[in-house]
Image (cartoon, rainbow, N blue to C red; front, top):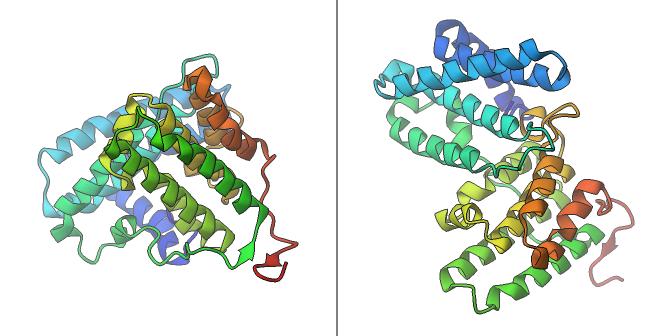
Length: 303
């Protein structure tokens, strides 16, 4: 689960959440729901597991809505933990749809994740000293500076972003949209730097997962409008899942739940024909054509 690659956070998901579920039917429903969804991806032919996943998810959502209307100090951790589980369930479920069905952008997940931030702020007095503080501190201290060595992956990334960035000066781009595009390019660059610099995987995973909600709200508004540049940038963010350590709560599992492949294929189908060139780099990433090079490093100034 989120942050479980960090030893300081593993206890939350291996001990704290299960113990919380024993005392909270709210958390139990959400935990059973996402567990059943995971099992369903591993055993797609078993419709009973798929039904159980939907049943517990629906129950968790219903219970969570009621709980939000009557928040008490002692319920804060259960409410926050359930919100996090529901958010990850939604992310995985949205990327488990059959290929023949129209692709739906994961906006609901991002809106829910932004809601978790608001919920965290509202419940702060009840969460001081809580184990859940990590959720609001993702990626802190991550080394995302320009690497001191040459790497072909970064060269390809920079050339790709430079080509896309040239379109930001076209007449149909508002100053506000251009600013958001440029911030997104910077964020994608920083994540790639962190990957090459060997930053801790759980920090990179969290940063990739939360990029759209850390940007100005206009970014998601542009994605919702199916703005070609915003879709292309979102595709680059999601494609980075293929170059970080695989974890089922973010990447999905089994043949029917491959998040990056499903999302990139779906976004490519949404992109207007004249913008399909912007999907070349994300497609190369998920197909493995654009590889990470850890050897044959050439130090700058020595080549």
